[in-house]
Image (cartoon, rainbow, N blue to C red; front, side, top):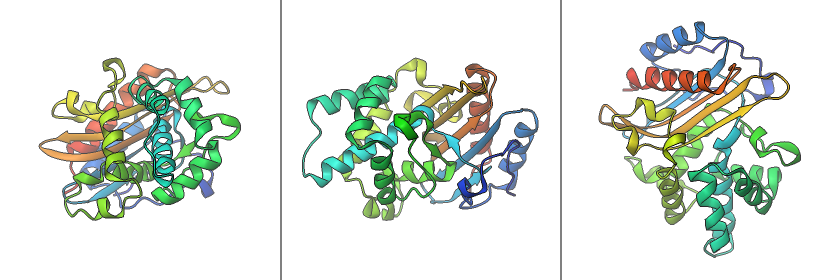
Length: 267
């Protein structure tokens, strides 16, 4: 059963149809979670073993710092096109951007990829159809959907696909994908919350989180994306949310949503 979480006020043209409705058990659990909050959220899950894929909730969300994975993917595509490796400076920026969520490094690489226009061009190749770079250099206000974040994660983690089709179709080369995965596995402990809450061993989760207070509303965007192993199965998970009174309440909701979504499985 598909359930769109409350306060879904995104413009109709920004909404993306989910690839599949969430299984009933997961949808019921997520519906109960949505009924208990004024925040808005969407969850995407992909079982890498079976390739089963489902999304709960709809609408577009600010990326906040999860866009840093997308920025790195765009940078790696540019390097591949030029037939070169990343420079030492690019690697330095990339490492602190993903592992520590350094904003200055993200801004430097955002400029290098050509800003919003460069991100959008890369996303056409990566298969993201509802993600649009933030205007005026504001990369954290890039808009995306849970379905698009699953597409990006599948690109990065393509080597884990059972049938290998995703790896063959990936725009990013094998070494580029391995590089992104490695950095996502080195996120500093204080930023390793989020989808890891649903994992058998949170320390083994590879992820990137994002959090952003909105000046206009005083409310927070809180997001988490990554690869999680739960009950012995490996999943790609994206939880996007906004409308939180503070960061801590956003983190708590994202973690509850991840646990609820994976608790029912997709098979």
